[in-house]
Amino acid sequence: MNTFVRSLPALALLAAAGLAAPPAARAGDGLLIQRVQQERGLNLPARGLSMAQVEQRYGTPQRKLSPRGGDSRRHPPINRWEYPTFIVYFEHSHVIHAVLNTPAGNNTHPATVN
Image (cartoon, rainbow, N blue to C red):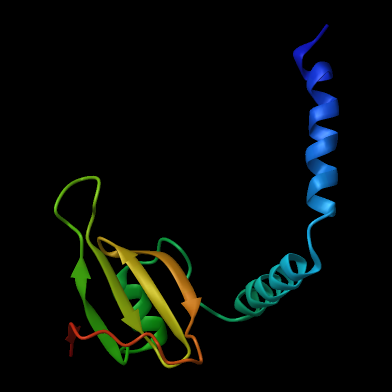
């Protein structure tokens, strides 16, 4: 018998287990989905833009934090730029991720470069 066909009952059990998750877990997922939808609606820097392109399109960031990593090929330098409403992460000099700034204000970092 085909391996895929034999694994169908196991896949069905896994799917059913996901649907039977406790309500608290599903509520947390809703908040994450809401945050992702909010980020998609914003004009955040796209993956792959260079630092120069980000600065040209969005202006000078409030803070440019000191790079982290860079000690090996497996740990490339990561830079973080903070804008009033979002944060941009760069690997070397290109955007890898942009996220909304958290309202809790916990994005401060002591190694700030002005």
